[in-house]
Picture 1: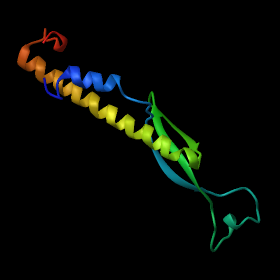
Picture 2 (picture 1 turned 135 degrees about the vertical axis):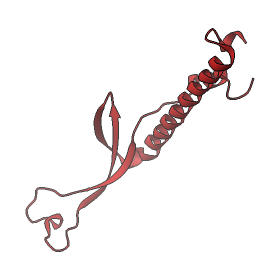
Picture 3 (picture 1 turned 180 degrees about the vertical axis):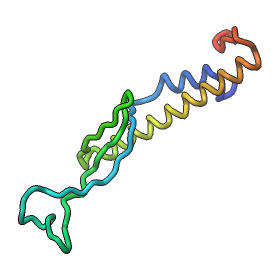
Picture 4 (picture 1 turned 120 degrees about the vertical axis):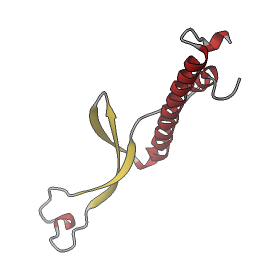
Length: 111
């Protein structure tokens, strides 16, 4: 049984860690104080950078700010999310191939 067998992929998915969709970007903002350097007409100095997490959930786009000390942890969650998406794709491909080769009654746990 190879690493591309459905049972092995399912085990890897089951043993996955915390995950979160999205990506982190740097944002700079302008405040509402009329005499702030961020409002300068020639050389504005915007506030930031701030880390912003952007993601979609159930078809709705969302954003939230991430504290600098949490960026590394959130990045790990995002990486795990992408790894899981890849595993789901691999699992789908494995089942399609096995159903094609062995028929619709194929059960990888009975092999």
